[in-house]
Length: 229
Image 1 (tube, rainbow, N blue to C red):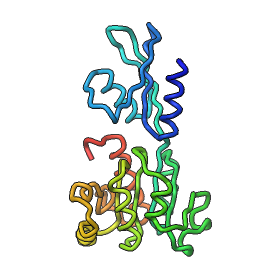
Image 2: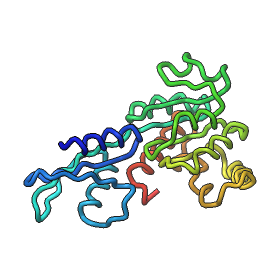
Image 3: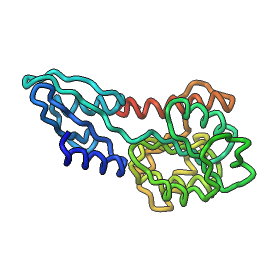
Image 4: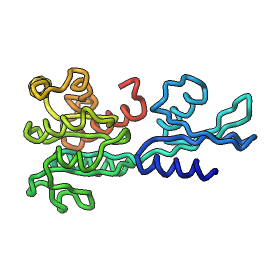
């Protein structure tokens, strides 16, 4: 690998930018492809985007020789706003699915190591925590407090960002009220429409653990099949 290519890869890693290194196995020539920042519709770019979405390298046969696509994705992260009952099983399930999980809640009685053993806990106001954590294309934000004083500021930060998923707990009626409040904050309808609310896949979930399953399922669908969710 050439030194300038390595330097760029390290810079992209620091900036949490997805990149695919395309190496021609015949000529050994290399090219960096940014699968989510490019409108190129060529076979190579489409294959690189598919590899990035699947988090898996692959070999592409081309007229100029086989090309190996090596994926360099930032880590998957899930930021859960609200240290509530649903957050407990969801944090464990998300971690098992490969996410770096952070639970944010300014209420110290809720955000405790006893309730969330081993988790990254932030006892801060959600909007401040989200700004400090930094939001990128590999981050999902799940807001579960059901308290507008906490949920709304978090959503106001998450929606204009590059996060791939934003979800918020609440019924259809609660969500309609949420939409009105966010409109009053000046958020556009296009941004508000990014919210998955009511949150989760419609699987008839009842218990906190079942709701957590429905949320993680919807997050996974959005990550792996962005055009279908």
